[in-house]
Amino acid sequence: MLKKLSHVFLIALLLLGTASSLLIYKAYATAGILDHRQIKMSSSASGATNVMYSVSFKVGSTSNVGGIVIDFCAEDPIPNDTCSTPQSSFNTNHATTTINNPIGIDGTFAVDVSSTVQTMIITSGTPVSLTAGDTVSFDLGDGSTNGFTNPATTNTTFYARIFTYTTNAGATSYNTTTHQAGTYKDFGGIALTTTAQLSLTAKIEEQLTLCLYTGANCAGGVTAQYLGDANHILSVSSVYANANAKLDASTNAANGMIIYASGTTLTSPQSFTIAPIGASSAASSPGSEQFGFCVGTTGGSVNSLAPYNFSNANCNAVTTGANTTGSAQFAFDTSSSPNMTTLGGMPIASSNGPSLNTVLQLAYMANIAPTTKSGVYSTTQTFIGVGKF
Image (cartoon, rainbow, N blue to C red; front, top):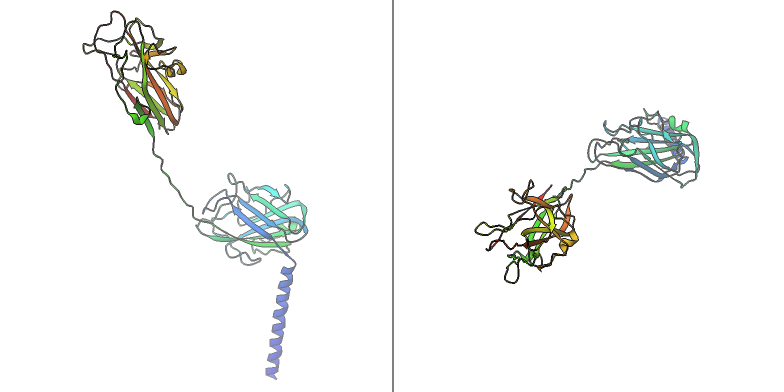
């Protein structure tokens, strides 16, 4: 008899278990599944603040949607399971987080005051009618001044449970303490994770080029320059120019570069000199002592400076030989502060920022007077490039 009763009791338990399973299945069968669901974080860095969480899904049921609940849990994405905050640092910042760029729901949907640090409740006074398969998407936060605070530990997986409700009252009835969802319409689970950030470093060296040459290009090097006729002799009746010398200048300095020049006027071993033109540019005047130069520029963003920059085009038009100065004007400043004789020289060209290669033509001119003393006159000029990094 006892054995028979035991069989009856076992059958009863089996029937009860089957009934419970049917009840649970029925409860889930009434809800639709949110498809193509995702939450994109604007940053996956652990502990990041003001992070925008972009939510997107397709509704599973044709019905009104008046409320949406997104519950963030440490354990799993299963409805009504235990749900604890994904680390104490996680925060939806519901009091300040805004809804932006809504699709499928109108602008009346907003974060509800009953939201918590882990549960975002979104409601609208006017539910929207959606058809199964319609897309709903919106951004929570703007990624700059408001948004979520991520879990503080790197490589932390956490979960989101998304529920839709036909009314806002259904959403606000969500129990944020026990995390029981109540009667929802559609549901979908999502996994999220924080990740380590990859740090990349590249070094860019400071660059500065200043190359003086008299050949076809910088590789051609420098040779001696002469002013005068084929025998390097100056005459009273002719003006002589030499425009063979050039400078290549470039830099990646944030504030550009300055080119300084220093030197003396043409001087003989007996210390006789040809008078420098001075701080004000002047055209050639055969029959009177003059020595000076102008600077023409081509390409890049380095520009010549006063008093050597009178008409860039005219200086670039100067050619080497007798009476070839055209309309160019020249200078050789020995009186300003600084000037050509100052230690370190004076600025003759500059740029205000990084510059591709600029070609600076250095055109020199010399005239003599009938009383200019005989001798071999020469000078050396030095050029210094300074980058303003």
